[in-house]
Amino acid sequence: MAVWKTGRTVIGMLSLILFVLISFQSCAAGLGNAIDNNNSLSGTAGFCLAICMMIAGIIAICTRKSVNKIPTVLPALFYWFGSLLTIGSGDTYGDLPIWGTLSFIFGLVFVVACYKQKK
Image 1 (cartoon, rainbow, N blue to C red):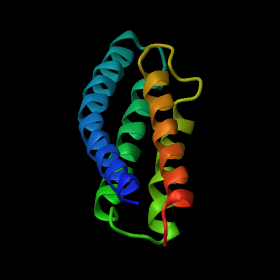
Image 2: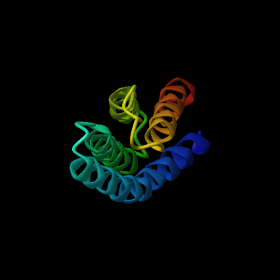
Image 3: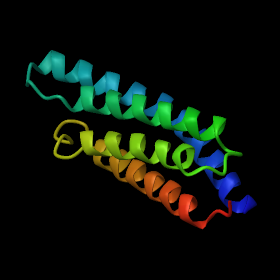
């Protein structure tokens, strides 16, 4: 169905935009952690999430017309891996659990798209 192809493309573009936003926030959080010397890794976890979202977004955009299962599920794995990195690491970077939840939801959309699209 064209709805799932369009949705995958839109989520891929959103992921690339969120990559820029999350990267800047993570760098600021990491700088704050370094200045405070509090040994928190929330800035690093946020940057790793941003990288995972960028990779998933690029794969989603490049494979938007694919009807195979693997290119449809592969971005979901990157979204979920990035989401796992954010568990328990929102102590100094309060937006990180929000971005992690959004990444998990994006992964769910790709899994649903995998099973709903016609071959």
